[in-house]
Length: 210
Image (tube, rainbow, N blue to C red; front, side):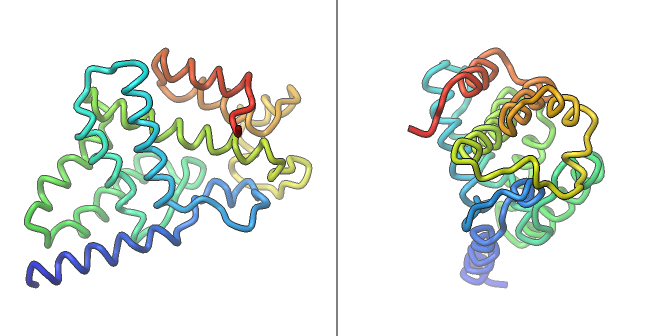
């Protein structure tokens, strides 16, 4: 294929992410006419990264982080969205990496882009770890935004893997709201640093949809 065709093919493939709805919101039966797409999620993760870098002055290459976030959901162009409740982390990573390799193999810079994707997946470098936390925080805050306008009814949930999770059930029995349960679950299970935990705590205590 020629360079022009590669550019068009890559663009058109990524364009599909505008129509891929985030699976977690479907699981929880969020009652909103238009749910967040993967493309929107990517944008908001990038905006969070900019804000977190600004306010907490992380010693990171923010441009690399923004690039990393831009491609971190690339695999969903051909596989769609999977959550931790649908598949094991090991299986998910294997599927993701195979898909990304297939997507990038025809691009001149494909190998370099793939390395950045794998760096994100590994969560080992300071940029990858920061980007990973931003990715998770965006999901937490979007949950809070949905919950503040009562788009989720916990009394009208069909049986699904997320709500049947043992820790989720414990939090729900403590009469937590949907977003309280979600944010507290993630605060406990995701290796957030102290700055990200402060943002989670603020969201738990305040209305964030101004």
